[in-house]
Length: 397
Ligand code: FAD
Ligand code: SF4
Ligand code: SF4
Image 1 (cartoon, protein in one colour):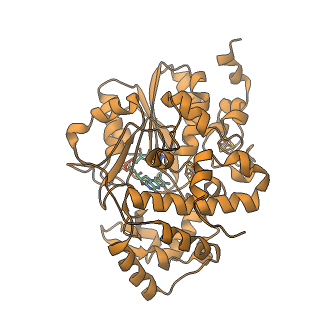
Image 2 (tube, rainbow, N blue to C red):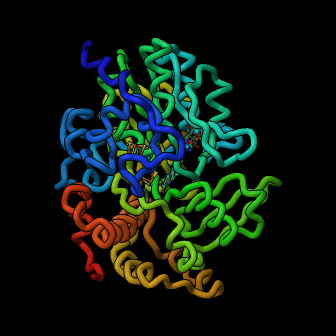
Image 3 (cartoon, rainbow, N blue to C red):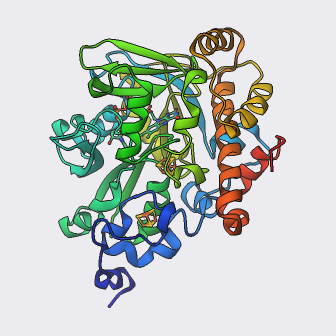
């Protein structure tokens, strides 16, 4: 038996059973397949391998002396972009879905791993291998919950597919890169999104119920660059809630332990990443990591308006203040939160500086979480780039 086949003897875990990473499991889906055989070296929460896999994937390590690479990972190019004709109902303007559609229709790939929702629940993720434009479009918009995207990996090998696009978030992509050579593919393309503060389906319900005026009609939401959460409702209306007014004391425990321990916010191992946080308000942010990513972007360039990335403001005082405030679960009264939101929006960090603000404050919080809850893992689990980023701040014990 070749090494490619030895994993086929392994047995997927049953739904609901304890996963090898225990409470840190982000439900990436790998353990729902026989690729669980490789879990020790593939799981982002058992063996953190970002630095090493970056070099194999992009043919060079991240340059830690370059501030943009330190923060945003290996890249050739970054830009702000938006679709000239946005896809209705997409999370932002639909650049992710558009790249996937072009790749499928031009025959670069035979299938696209993406995540639709179940019929009963718009936020319950249902990973699929899409083979038509309609199936890709049915996966548009974030399912803001842990999603087992890799649970379809066995189907790929069985289908005989040779060229594949996978859309996913950092923890899913680390596990995917670790088993990439075992999938029997000729070419794998990886389209990533940044990801932070993810929750279980139950955690999401609690967030919606404590934060939105009408939890049952929310169709999507985003933590935006204007320091507000924007909820879109079924009737098309928009509701905004300032970050500083969030009920931190209630929300502190809703983020999944995996996401409180995650340092791959910017999806370091994807070929191209499409988010928003490094771009001006209402624009998307594109990070092209390697030649494969460049090839993917070229397919949709004529559908996009683009502009260079910008950076403005000084995040560091705001980050330093946010660390003890989060730790003590401080919640401002709504009037003060609104005022603070307006002031920060006027003078606060913008563009890449906003992205650095978000990375700094999440990494500091997560570093403290790992130190306090999984101290024995701290040294190996936190990548070198994250240690340098956190090292710029004074942390409480
Ligand atoms: P669309 O065309 O609407 O396509 C969305 C794609 O996302 C679909 O293909 C779908 O398969 C995939 N998807 C949906 N839910 C999941 C999931 N749970 N796991 C894996 N794949 C999924 N960007 C930032 O810049 N900063 C952030 O802090 C940030 N946080 C995020 C948190 C989560 C949980 C997710 C899923 C995304 C986050 N993003 C963040 C990315 C951003 O919200 C948009 O997804 C991205 O800009 C693409 O928008 P779009 O309109 O091009 O996507
Ligand atoms: Fe398995 Fe993925 Fe959970 Fe790790 S995160 S234990 S690889 S399902
Ligand atoms: Fe995975 Fe990290 Fe996103 Fe959590 S925050 S779902 S661990 S990429």
